[in-house]
Amino acid sequence: MANPEHGGGFDPMHQFQIHRIVELNLFGVDVSFTNSALMMVIAVALITLFTIGSMSGRAIVPGRMQSLAELSYEFVANMVRDTVGRGGQKYFPFIFSLFMFVLMANMLGMIPYSFTITSHIIITFALAIVIFIGVTTIGFIKHGAGFLKFFVPSGIPVILAPLLVVIEVISYLTRPMSLSVRLFANMMAGHTMLKVFASFVIGLGILGGWAPLALMVAFTGLEFLVAFLQAYVFAVLTCIYLNDALHMH
Amino acid sequence: MAENDTNNQTEPAESHEDTPLTGHAHRFNSRLDELGDGLHRIRARRVAGRTAVRRGTSIGLAFRLITELVAGLVVGGYIGYQLDTWLGTMPVFFLIFFVLGMAAGMLNVIRTARLMQADMARDDSAHEDRAGKGSRRD
Image 1 (cartoon, rainbow over the protein chains, first blue to last red):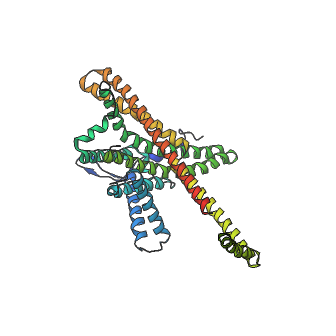
Image 2 (image 1 turned 90 degrees about the horizontal axis):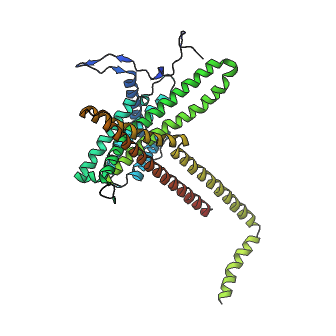
Image 3 (image 1 turned 90 degrees about the vertical axis):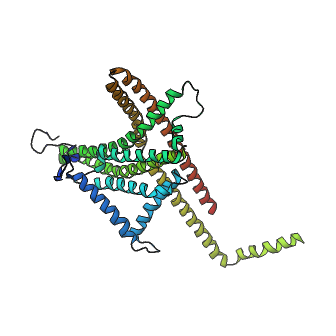
């Protein structure tokens, strides 16, 4: 294994480092344009280019790119219809943007030498907290104070009610936490693992390096699956939370 | 009379089978069956693939449950810690909310597991439905 003390040390966490590209300071707050911000801009630009560009033809018989755009539209539309049901189509644009952004961020991270936006918990947590606050607000707008009944399980003894309400509230508050940690941990663990195995390939040299190399190929395939799956899970859980807020079970 | 009618109806069909042209029809039918089987197989494979993607890897499922549990602990502990620093009663609320967080985590785990179970049951029934429809069409 490469020794960090020597030159050209190996650090599997190096890929997650954020560095400033354009230094910016707004009223004492560091708002520098970083490599993370750059990747976000690229992701949004690619999604916009993909959806607008591929649909501009509006062919009745879709070509490859138009099929892809229609497929992603239908995939998310089905997800919203299945999990949210009635009244869910209103929130489709948000879910679609969310899904496409997370998917594109995860997939861009799979390109060698690029940066995985979603491997930073602050990014996923910001997404999750926006969803959490938004969904809770929707719940209170739709049901008024009646939304508080969501925290009272039906058919429980009065003595147990205070305890169970506290547990329900904590369980509700864990949502942004588990939502963000799941995405961030999956992406970071996967990419770190790839880096560690890559170092084994170099470390074992031309004789023994083939076994970890073969594993790397398999893991890369798995990482693509995880990248898609985590975007899907993120969007589906948002739909489930939305469903809870709209219909209260 | 009724018997005569049925005989009349069946006879032409049988004679049709005997004519040399029926070899053609027979081959056509068997080819149709073959295509139907192939279509059925492809459809079943596609449904299975879709369910596999939906379910993800087992480690993914396990990871989902673990995060729910840990998130409960962390959020409960954090609330207790903040209450303690605010009220100056250091370990009291931390311990209470740590336990409550554990309970909330368990609750989330059970809910998530139930959701997964419902998902799997739905996928399985959809799989059977589609497979059944395919064989009927054959």
